[in-house]
Length: 359
Image (cartoon, rainbow, N blue to C red; front, side, top):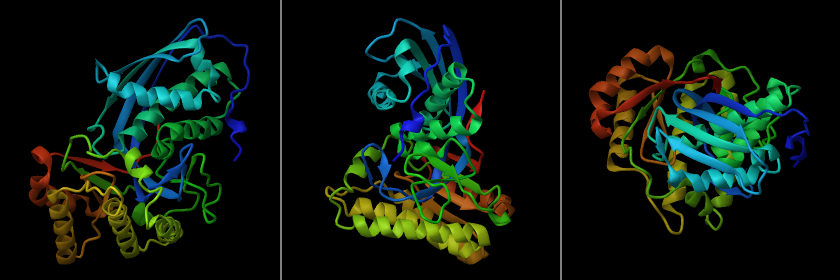
């Protein structure tokens, strides 16, 4: 794998102080990845909808200092110093030091805030790490003005991946593939790429309502869950299935077969959780209300000839997916029937988005 392309070119330019702010979205995988090898290489390819309203806004203030052996940074989350997050970010900086050597020359103050609950299974690490990556690339593009937007986005996805695999899919949108796949032109294990084919109109501006069944932190982190795939009895079959499903959904997204889309997306969600149920040690991230919502979605779909469906990430919360032409009816159904299964009746109305935005 050619990682040398991401090593920063030497520059003579010096910047004493700089500040950059980025808003980067979460994403929801349609075909899931679960299982990886070091350094953050997926065992199968995945594809996700980039979201719009679920995002992280991060500002990094850079102040030049004498070069040191350690990366110097302070981290504030929603206005408060967040030392609990520092080890993950410190490990991220350690992984990217070869590609961003300039980070040793700056004191960084990172201020971050989410539009949704962190660590609850809405891919907060995806939006958080991609935001940091975009801020770093803003500094790098100042140090090396010859970088093109394409090069910036590609390296940002590469860097973000080293912090959180799914973060590689949060730089661009509305559909991003991460993982080398023979049927996706330009795809790579090292970074995410925009889905390269024309998408059928039925999937344009697709809606995603996130039902907050449990806003607390997951009992089992995604990192631990991924590691449990190493000796999983069904791991190899799963990796083959996921890559087959990516080929299938590529066709579906192009031909507009929404019934096939529903079947594949729901199957992928349940398969992800089946892998958790059959890990050793096994664990369950779904809650009773997760199942209540799923059964109500199936009932509504059958009774109303609807194209509503669900997917799940690695958590209890439910993503309700539906085409834009059903927005009014489905939102009413969520408010009247599904919100009672949410913590404090809370849910987030979202839709597909187009990736990171500089603020």
